[in-house]
Amino acid sequence: MPRPLVLILDFGSQYTQLIARRVRELGVYSEIIPGTAKLAEIKARKPDALILSGSPASGYRAAAPLPDAGIYALGKPMLGICYGFQVTQQLMGGEVSKAKHAEYGVATFVQDGKSPLFKGVPKRFKAWMSHGDEVKALGPGWLRVAHTTNCAFAAARHRTLPFHLIQFHPEVVHSPWGKQVLSNFLFGIAGLKDGWTMQHFVRDAIREIRAQVGDGHVLCGLSGGVDSTVAATLLHRAIGDRLVCVLVDHGLMRLNEADEVRRELGEKRGLNLRVVDARKRFLSELAGVSDPERKRKIIGKEFITVFDREARKIGSVEFLAQGTLYPDVIESASAGHGAQVIKSHHNVGGLPARMKLKLVEPLKWLFKDEVRELGRALGLPEHLVDRHPFPGPGLAVRVLGAITEPDLDALRQADAIFLEELRRAKWYGRTWQAFAVLLPVRTVGVKGDERSYEKVLALRAVDSVDGMTADWTRLPHSLLARAASRIANEVRGVNRVVFDITSKPPSTIEWE
Image (cartoon, rainbow, N blue to C red; front, side, top):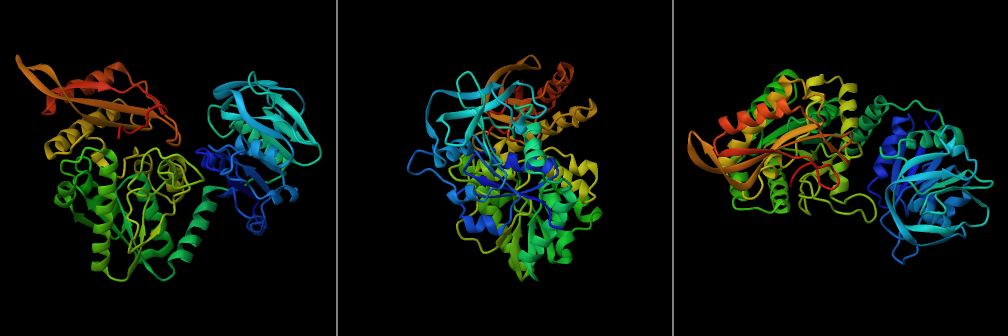
């Protein structure tokens, strides 16, 4: 019996993948396609239900992405979210225009009528809004279901068809009743059955890898982080010895990291691993470069150069595998229609226009927590699966400004001290990500009764689920005091330590 499929039409919202993730968490398989996909493509996929995403666009503008109007004749259960609400009304006889009062953040929803979408949900509830347009009038056959203080039509349903529209985002954690709403749509309105698990993803991913690669050979960029480790393990299960892993020691790794990766993944896990010493090459290209975007582009270009060279040594390699995740893709604006660029990532934003190797990215539709779950499904041990995220460009984006070897050495030592103190206090596993950042700022201090004029080091620790949003971790003062004291005393060139207490948004997790 074929598994149920929820097809998500993506109009460029940065939350689209969160919708897919929430649906998968509820045990139903979902796929994402462009919101402008033709009706024939949608029908060919045989979806059991449709979800229309949000968008930064305004549906009444000429360049706005519009769905094929034929989807409404399919009669499939449909949930329109934010822009999905507005564009549905626009195409079905309603009226949409710029809102008199835009809504961004938490709003109070008040139900005006009954709807199976809100079964088990309070009449009044908090939900996350993010819109500057609104529906002014509903089309024929539609009923108002809810409103907010500033939005007259915050939810609506069709009188006879299984179509439901909401202005808020149920997929984000800031909408505490969002999971219940999605569950009501999937199991109550659409009548779907759950049962999709990460083991299903493993099976499907292996099949897709084999179909893409065929009899070819794959070179996998392996850093030792969670993403590349899981990607390499998945690839090894799919194609076995036709996978060659390459660890590029670019001089931007953490303390003793290259040796640890060689021992843990090469010797213990049995992966065919080659370690390439490219420290001089990378640091030479990065000399004097301060702009973080240029750093990423340079690092991405150099990675591909090294991979191409190693592929020639191996011979008959046609594919390059990377542990790219969806937050990398979406922040680089390579997904969706009109998604906004936050920052490029070397996996996606730093690749040259012409590459000799074809990309294999088996994790690019997953979030970090899903990758950890996948790692467990593949049998990886907890100490590998629960490792904190580490950026692809490495310490290049944690030494702010121009990079020098003394600064890299200082940062490595400080970062190791911070993580050691976290583990000692049993806070490493309670923190989603923690690291140190070396700032291009000098301050006056006193060391050994003498004046010092050295750099400032920032400590960063955040709690998150998927990396799309994050809050700073409330670490114990005693832990911070020990880490700061050790860093100021043991790390040459640092005389001041600060702690970053900003969330994402408005900041990003990494400083660059």
